[in-house]
Image (cartoon, rainbow, N blue to C red; front, side, top):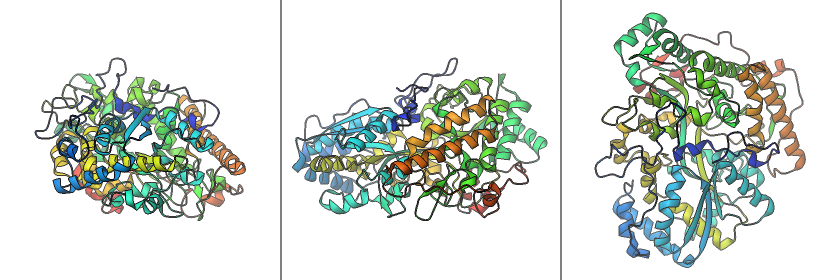
Length: 620
């Protein structure tokens, strides 16, 4: 596991050497916290009859017992339940891999992914299934996110076949097409239709648009699993009549799920400063982290500024200004992140977002929060003393559902819920609201042709409908619409705290990863934490911090353009103009609003999910 503070100063892709998704492995809690139960055992006490254990990634599986080819299909079909497919359709998909794998039988291919529950299931279980059916051996290595992308970049730079296929985040959709070092999924499918599963069904992937480059409308990566950054709250406390009445008396509206940041702050103030104690325990209305390190970067550039309303309208990514505050022109060329160049990273909305992040951390969160990182803060809500968290990853679902925890009922159903995140005063209908992380198969051009074909079969195998439902039960990272809609997920929903409801709702499309307008994710990402951290410590104002982010991002983009490493849509920075020139124009960057703290607005949980059919209802 990578060290939180081990990033180098070289600006290389290896700078992103810490992976936020390693929490899916499980791990120890912070000192004094309830044990942070990982996905390998979180649901041991609430098995659903007739279905595999939720959140459990087996160390291995061998249901075929030595059988191979078609003789192994029945055993693996029984194991790979549930599935959105009928038994006949599932068998047909598995027979495809048996038939197409024959020409590659005896080969060994090398794959690499982050060490998360999703990819552990692939490495521990699906490599065996694939070998039994096709005769192809897959060495599927697992390592930290930074090491994975570092090896990917090394292969791209040296043209040497280090791994035949990689998992890297879809956050690189702005990087990969510009580098021109990978096959596009679209072209590869067309050129190799003889080994492409007819029922692969790219339109069934929730995040298809997130891995599509708008310049050519081609898919560049194949999604494998994803999780969202959502709002988390103690539904049992929010439903208490005494607390609801006390809140209404104090603030003049109902205690429900906050729609806007003003309501979130009122609720934070209510629990931290008005309620203070529940059942004899000191409680807090907000949870976050603030220790200097790379995870502060994720905390901010993973759509926090867009949640405030910094960027432009547009789904999946704002145009022309995206959620990193970078403006792109009509030809996808980044032209600047500073307001002086038409960007928004140091504009009023971004500064407001940083001010709220710092203020809430210090005023409403537990005292230890300022010294915590993403990893150490993750388990804290399980202690049972936090009322809500505005920036919570659904990757923690299994870790907060063990019946031994104080936030879970005796029957295994959670006392908490995840819900759509509230937005800030600069947000407008038609903008994204939050972030999703999506690991995706990425196919380098430097893999030998025959090995690439075998690797393509494996990539399809791990993501096809015959497999994906079972993988969802193990890792809880849905990536296919058909899996989310399975009857089996309806049965699982009561134990998952809103995960199923969110992914079935129209809200899901408003939560998207880093977009196509970030020209080199790994070069730009370290800039964020190094320059935002001083705002947390008080060494810089929010404005000074974001000015530094903008200056350094623009400098880095200028160097990328000069170096010629980006083969398409390289940065072409606008000349600097006055801030007023851009703030007076339409769209982002947006001028300071008259009232950054409007009246709080809340909605009942069920109504909020439906509200995304009409985003205008979320204004305010």
